Every structure is written in C-alpha cells, then in structure tokens.
Amino acid sequence: RRGGAVAMYAPLTQHHRTFLDAAEARPCCSAIAPAYPGLLSHFPLMPRDSRFLAVWYTIAWCVLLVTFFAAPFEMAFAKAPNPPSTTCFEAALDIFTVIDILISSITAAPHPTKPGVFERSLGASTCQYLRGGFLIDVASLLPSICLPSAMNRFEEKSFAKMRILRAARLLRVRHFFNITTEWQVSGGVSNAALSLLNRMGLILFFTHVMACLWAATGLEVAVDELAPSNWIDALKAGKGGFEELYVEPWGIYSMALYWAIMTLTGIGYGDITPQNHFEYWVASACMLLSGGLWAFTIGEVCGVVTNLLPHDVALKKEVDELNWLMADRGVNEARRREMRRYVYEARMVKRIEEQKSVVQNLSPMLQGQVLGSMMEGFCTKVSFLRSMHDTTVVALSMRLKSRLYAPGEEIAPSRSLNLVRRGIGARAGRLLTIGDVWGTDLLLTDITLRESNFVRCLSYFEVLSLPAEALFAAVENNPPEFAKLRWAQVRLALWRGIRLICYTGRMLRNNSGIGLEHLGDDDIFKFYREVLGGTFDKWEPALRRKMSKRLSTRDIVSEAPAAPTEGRGAAPGAAQPDIAQMKASMEALVRQMDALIA
Image 1 (cartoon, rainbow, N blue to C red):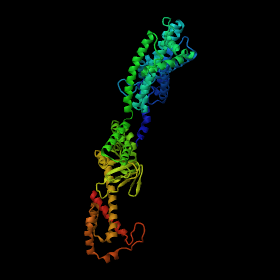
Image 2 (tube, rainbow, N blue to C red):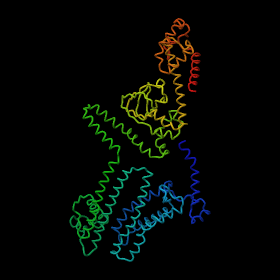
Image 3 (tube, helix red, strand yellow):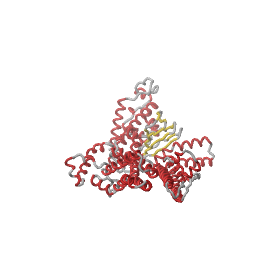
Image 4 (cartoon, rainbow, N blue to C red):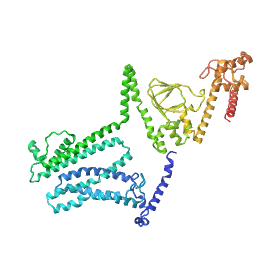
C-alpha cells in the first residue's frame, strides 16, 4: 500500500515523459524522429536517473583530479620536445575532454526559471550548454592546440615562457565541483565532513601549485645568464648530495614541496632561501597567500570540528555539568557511576527527540518514509492501528515519546501504548523484549477495565510511548479514522467487561457460595452495573445479607453442583458454575450492552 501506487504508475510516467520529449523537441530534431522513433526517447540524459551518467561522473571526477595535479607539474617541468609518455598523457586528456563535451551536450540542463527542474527537451538542453559551459570546456583544449605549433616555431627559451598555457586545463574546475555537489545530494555526505575534506583538498592543491611555482622559478632563473645563482644552486653548494636530486624533475619537486610546506605552516628551517630578486618576489607572494589561507583554514576547521559531531559535544557538556552537580551535592561514588552510565545510555533517546524538528520540514510522504520504521512495530501488533491511513500513522509517529529506564526501575501503569526498543523487562510473569507491545487498552476510559500491572526493568529499558491524548488528537479531525478507533474501543470494552463479570462471578461463588442462578433479573443487572462501575466491593456485603435472608445455607449447598476434582484452575471444594445459567447471563449482558451503545 505504501509503494504500490508508485510502482503502478511508473510505466505511465515513462510514456508521459516520452510524449513530452517528442512534443518539446526542437525543429532541428524533427527530421530524426520519423526515422528513429525510439532514439529521442532516451535523450536528454537525466543526471539523477541515468546509471551511465553516474558511472561517467565517477570517471570524470578521477580524471579531473589527476588533471589538476598534472597541469601545474607540466607547467614547471615541461620541455621541448615533450617525451613520448607526456605526449600520450596529454592526448588521453584531450580525448577525454572531447568525449565529456559531447556527453554534456546531451545531458539535461537545469531549468533556468524553475529550481530543481531539468529541461525535458534535448534541443533546449544543448542550447543552454552551448550558451554556458561549452566555451570554458573548449578553452581547456588550448594547450593541445597552441603548444604543438609553438614547439616548431620557437626556441626552447620562448617555448618555456608559453608553458603558462597549460593552466587552461584548470578551467574545468567548475565541472569538478558540480559533480561533488551532486554526490553530496545523492550520497547524503555530512556538510561538516565535506567542508573539512574541501579544506584539506584546497591546502594540498595550493601546496602543490606553490611547489611547482617555486621549482619553475629556480629552473627559469637557471637558464638566465644575468642571474646564474638560484635556490637550487645554493642548496646544492650548501648541502651537496646526489647529482640526480638537483637535475631530475621529481628530485627538484620534492625539495620545492618541502619548501612549500614550510612556508605554508610557518615553520621555516632556513635551508632553502631565495637568491635573487625574482625569487624574493615569488617567495613573498607565496608567504602572503599561504599565510592568509592557513589562518582561514584553521578557523574553518575549528568551526567544522565543533559542528561535525554536535550530539557528542552536547553529551560531553552534559556529563561535565552532571559531574559538577554530583560533586556539589556530595553524591557517593556508586551513585555517580550509575548516573553517568544513564546519561551515556540515554544519548540515542535525546537524538530521536532532536530529530523531530528535522522531520517536520519534510513533505508528508517523506515523513512517512522516515518515520514508518518507528511505527512498524505498533502497526504489526496493534489491530486498530493496522488499518489506519499513512497520514494518520505519520501524525502518530510525530507524537511518540522515547523514554529510558534504569535497571531495577518500575514503570507504573499509565494510559499509553508502549513499544520496547531495547532492553528486557518483566510484566505479569512475562518477559518483554525488543518489539513487544503493552498498553493496548489505552482506548478505555474506565480504569476498572484496564490492566494495572507494573513493568520491572531488568536492564536499561528504552520504550516508545504513545499517550492516549495524542492518539485521539491525531484522529479528532478525521471522521473515518475516528470511527475505526471508536469501534475498536467498543469491542475492547465489551470484551473486557465480559471477562471482568465472569471473573467476579467466579470469585463470588468461590468465596460466598452465591451463584448467578440465585439472583433475579434486577439483581443480575445491578450486579453487572456494580462490577463495571468498580463499586462491587461496597455492594457485595449488602448482596450477601440479602441472599442469606432468601436462601439458607443448606439450600445453597443442595442446589450447587458437585465440587470438581482438584486441579488446575479449580480450588478444593469450589463449585462449578452452571454453564447454561452463565450463557443466559452473557446473552442478557450483550443485550444490555447493545441498548447502552444504541
């Protein structure tokens, strides 16, 4: 019932979508539709429904991540001509970029005036992409267009200055963050955790760019005849070491990365220092930018860590306040441990109460999906809740109260429906475990018809409770649901009344020897009224005096049937009630109940 409607109308929704695609298609696509009637039904690709796009976005995210770290490295260490490995790597990136541009052109674009809605027309989505991110994606191909011709026309010095064109590959950072945002929506990643990861990634990327810039500074100055000295030559003269460390790109990059981390964190060992005017300018700019980034990151991380686990922070604060309270009041150590243990055990109870404000902001359907698991235990074991509508079940879920009881604690009987979430308890000689329900007689207003058994907690006992006031408040404006609840109330009251009358009649016979066959019609009706009204104990002495005047004890014993044999459910010497008389009494009770209900 909760998911059948969606499954039943899914084919209709698909046909409706195909019809809209064909109706809203641009004139340029009208010539394709007659030849390929099923082709346009698959386009444009919906970002949140297409499995192909989900896989492609994962591949694109990984490729873009490699690109963002490879482009600065190529800017610093690229040579003319490029080695074969670098040429193949750049060709693979270009092929990927072209394929990604084609896929983006057939992907549904967000509607310009309707937030959260995607374009259903292939032509409209393609035109919106051409007006938006197409030029930026094409501009990222500039290194492949310009650099090969520059290798043939210019010398090595001139080509080294054109390496800055490789930074055009970084223009696709917009696509990278769009994929990350979509993952956050679909995957449900915590905003605090994602913000922390973003700051860490920003620091790593900035450190990498700063290391590549510092390495390019040393290599650029090294080929300048006016300034033969640079930080690489100074470090080699001061420390020495293997020649490959100062010649190979990865060796120079490792030293530049070491300098970038020192500059970013403000440590500054002083072994790598600028040696000329150009290096001093570069180092000053790097220190200025890295100092601001580092200060901003520290402040951001402190705020993120505080909000990353708000429930744990609140729990620790509450425990500290409890410790101060117990120290001020002089509570002994055993009680302190017990109270601290209770606070830690009750953290999930408080979290459920705090999450209700979040659930209230959702639509009724989504509220039912979130809260359906909480009411599932009630709906499967309580008959009058099983037939209620989903909206009523959601309203009842919002009125649930979660409570936690300590071991050895007794739960007094109350007019509420209770479900065990965890722990073990005992009630009326029966163990209560996870999923058990008690208090189904909360519909009854008469206390004499409700059960009055205490619950003894054998461990930490977490209970979901639904008060009777909340139950009736949820259905008071819904006549069909209220009628179901009222009919369940009448049936339960009738059954509990019959059971109470039978029990009281049996006790009366066992204690005083007076059976229902000895009472007249008026006395029987008064007996029913006194039992159901809870005043039978006050009326019983008067009944005994009245019956003692009417019948002698010998007559009562002679009229009574033979005593049963001793066994389960029969006391020694007790007389069995007349089955026919009890049946007639029950029929009279049913007639009286029908009259009262009418």
